[in-house]
Length: 171
Length: 421
Ligand code: SF4
Ligand code: SF4
Image (cartoon, rainbow over all chains, first blue to last red; front, side, top):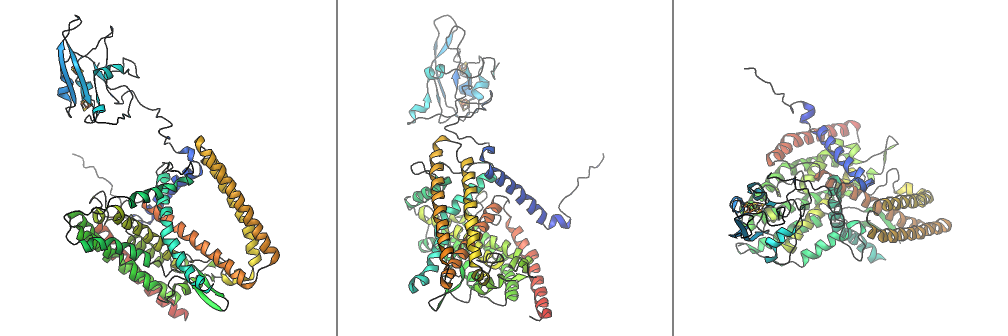
């Protein structure tokens, strides 16, 4: 087996004296400082509340939503896969029999405690029917009380994804 | 007048140490932001006036003042616990008071030293008092009674034994060069010219000792890259883990005053103190009219540059336009008043005492400018370099800086004897 010799750095006098490395580092930061000072428009940060970010990708995990079937009814079949996969155990589902003949089961209540959710996306991956997604693009969730952070089925159904239906992690 | 001239340097010390803290905090945050391609604090305002974010540290200060004074229940030595931040703050503040802000000035037959504590001990006072600050850190770490704090205190003590000697030895080289321990004499010596065209600043006379002194002064202030005692990524915040509200603020302010004091001493020893390059006090007295004319040209030029920069960079958001407008008007009015004042001075001519006062003001401004520049270097270094491990600090101190400093003393002494000065 051939032995690969890895070059070792840092043993010459020039490298040991640190001076050149120090000067190089200081030069780099000073260059950043002066370019940004002389023209603040080259700074890539955005003035957040006034300017909303425009670079949310289609894989971004934002607030959840429950998708609908083509006939506008809830797609979820209350199989509890998402609730089982959820590492923070923050999905609360109550199932009931579905009477309109589309399917056999549907969730009576479906709520997610957003204060416990860690936005890992496991629920989306676990769902066998592509019924839950996180593609609302909503990243800032504000409420005044803890109870308001528990979003229920109606709220989840009311959101629409900002990316097309074909952009699904599950399908 | 007599009383005023005696109190004046004390006021200057208060300004240089306390009033500059918010400025330094602001500078730290802004420079850090710009180095990291961010904007930094720019939201805090009073009726839309943001002053580039200077309002932010004032708001921070208000927050710290009105926070609850909290004493952790496990602390036994309450006396030392409360004493520690006081030591850090007091030592930093006291080390400042020997710095000369301007050349000695003679008014009505009295000679005043523009030094809050006009003693000849100068640099020795700084060395003695500044190193006391470490005791504050050690006591804080000990009395906080938790492992992280004690580790921080240990690191501080291991650090102090590695750099203090090198610092002392570097200073000895300066003492040999200037043949004095009084800071004012040193600064006066730096007003001369070397070979007729280079200012005889300490950094040019003693480059090696200068470098060692700067490195050790960074270590003295416990700032990056020598902030191992604080090491917030490894040992939480070490010695100020258990401190809150104003007690923490004292540590915090102490750090900034120490930084300012170190800058002031570095400037005094190495960068000509209050001297304006090529213009020492006598030269300025002889050519006071030329100095005034130079000011007459420089001030509007600088203000114009600043206004243009502000109008370019402060108008990204419409609500800030008003501030830019007001600031432009204010600066213009100031420049016009200043110019007419200069014209008046030029036309009426200056008496010797008037010109002394003028020179004193110029020298104080030059000193303030240099100190701010040095503070900028402190901030710049902090946001460039990672932290030294504490054994690396010892390695640097004992194996590199001390031998170099000793060699430097040796060669300086030989040179001084051979040159027969
Ligand atoms: S994103 Fe993760 S934590 Fe949040 S509900 Fe889904 S599975 Fe649970
Ligand atoms: S969202 Fe998906 S995984 Fe969760 S209960 Fe409904 S169908 Fe099952």
